[in-house]
Amino acid sequence: MRRWIDQLDKIENNINHYWSKLKCPPTDGVNAWKSAWDSYGVCSGLKQLDYFKAALNLRKQADLLGALADQGILPDYKLYSTAKIKSAVTAKLGVEPGLQCRDGPFGKKQLYQVYLCVDTDAKTFIKCPKLPATLSCPASVVFHPFYTWMLNSTAAAAFDSKIVLPTQTMLN
Image 1: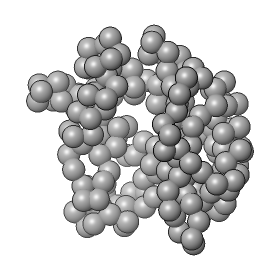
Image 2: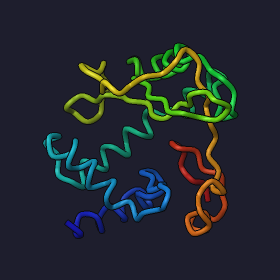
Image 3: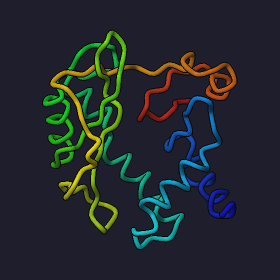
Image 4: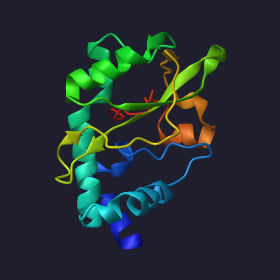
């Protein structure tokens, strides 16, 4: 298994920039990548490295932060309509996403994950035939920014104290 993980580190100038290993406490990302492969990749019909390359290409194509920003939805602690969030993603990609929320600041729910489905060509976003039953968001949610100080000092040092958003590429 280690061999294909080592290959991942070489794609896209380092997979850690795009496929986050952010966790508290921090990890090296290998378990997350292995879990993604075991859950989705093995059924994709792609080789391991090709699966992760396709995922990174889809990430660039989706540009979720850009789609949200185009509609004035920014990670700034404000409340945003989940219908507006879905509409912004739908306008960009032509398919409605699933949204997952978790407990957030100020006693509100925060946007946690955006779910998208992809056709077997690994290039085209499609309407999800079924979304996880765990998806649940109220009518309005907080779009919470992420800062490295939210991690412990070891993890923050690894990110050089730069601001990192959940789906944003770290800029050098």
